[in-house]
Amino acid sequence: MSNVPSPPSARILVLGGGPTGLYAARTLAAQGLQVTLLEKEPRAGGLATAFNHNGNWYDLGVHMLHEFDREIFHDIRDNIMGEERIAVQLDSKIRWAGSFYRYPLQFGDMIKGIPPLTLARCVLSLFSTQLWFKLFPKTPINAEDALIQLYGRQLYEFFFKDFTMRYWGFPTTELDAKFITTKMPRLTAVDVLKKILAKIGIRDNRVHAVDSALSEETLHYSRTGAETMTRRLAAYAQSLGATILYNQDVNSIENAGGRITAVTSRDTTTGVLTRHPCDYCINTIPLPLLVRKMTPPPPPEVLASCDYLKFKPITIHGLLVHKPKCIDGLYIYYRERIFHRVGEPKNAGLIVNPPDHSVLIVETTCEMDDEKWRVTDAVKEQIMTDLEIEKICTRDQIKEWHLLQAVHGYPIFRLGFEPHFQALKSHVDSFPNLRTAGRQGAFCYPNMHGAMRQGATSAKAVTGQIKIDRLETMPVPIQESMPQVLD
Image 1 (tube, one colour):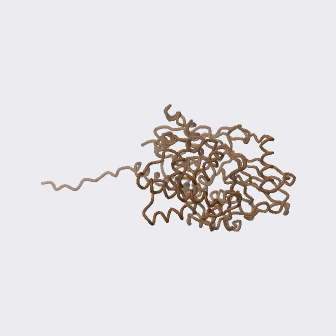
Image 2 (cartoon, one colour; image 1 turned 180 degrees about the horizontal axis):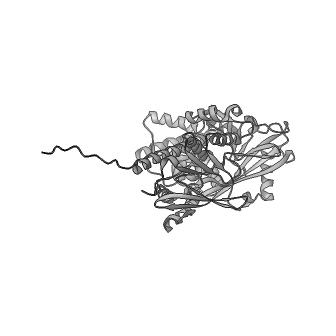
Image 3 (spheres, one colour; image 1 turned 90 degrees about the vertical axis):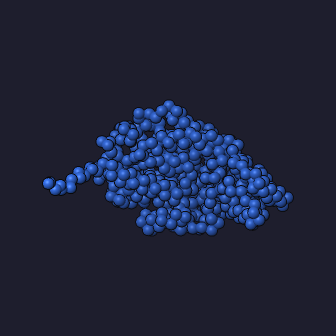
């Protein structure tokens, strides 16, 4: 038991300063534990942050806090954001069938948005599909199968097929069914029809989509964008005693005796290597990177599985536009444009200067080193053209153009990824003092409160492991023998 640390002096490392890592550090520091967080960037936040250019803030995507996890929400509201929090009503839309509709789709929107003959085919297809899989249950083999089981072939082909292909760059037949059950939001319109079918006993329980934003909901934001919550969360964790080290890129993760013993980081500004001994570690950096950086390295078959877990890069175009307001809503999804979503955070309370200008967050998925990642002139031209077609703004109104990019944007649940994910997860789980969590670390799709909940859960697991280690290292008391009566 010589490798097991003494709990009172336990040193805990958190790798990555996104919402998951920050909340883990906040939870551990609140218990008086010694915790150090290593963050690669010069600021906290991960994907849930913003960047300041010429006095204006540009979010790395659309990130707002829901109220679904009441404990997390109350902590953020009461202890973290304070007077910087702004409550705003959800107002998201989707450009579909030539018009704008609330997102997620409502029953009335579905009726208005689909031509009558197509709508009749969709309803009939949904009815027959639910009946068929009620009589002949089947586990879907890919995302196409899962979507058809959920919505019927007609609605799948009308609504999902082309958009999914454009978004991911490959057909739904090559996307794992797990993506549908963990990421795809439910269409409330379809839910209504499925409830009607359920009442007459026609229900398939094998495939479920996830809950999405409600049609009426309060979100939480700030006047400087998404950066506020993670900035304040980092400051709060530090006020509780946590240490946060920025510009620290994880270089290697040492293990010995079946435990993680130290992490070496490289300063991204000076190149200096620093070794951080640790007794416990919570990881939120991409799972394949974590495994590849272990020394000594994992078995070859585990390393080989790293190649099968991929992430979809994203490029965000932050535009300062000489127009007071560009879209009607917080953000809008587009199915037929080079961008898949456009957000206008000014509509949620973001301060923009000059006041008669606005900021647009134009999101695109891409591949490393393709045209959209390199942002060629042709890509910028197409973005401007599509913005003009949608009457969002003209190219002459664009006064500043800033690029925000993330290599590890979205986990890709490509068909066949699951065994490789399990191989990496099993290897990580073999270290009792290591936890991995968050979008990148757990290769999953949590929203903001879900990511923080994972951080809190990981912190709880570490404190539980500390208690176990304490029991294992406690000396066994010497039992005194009972007095003997001698004859």
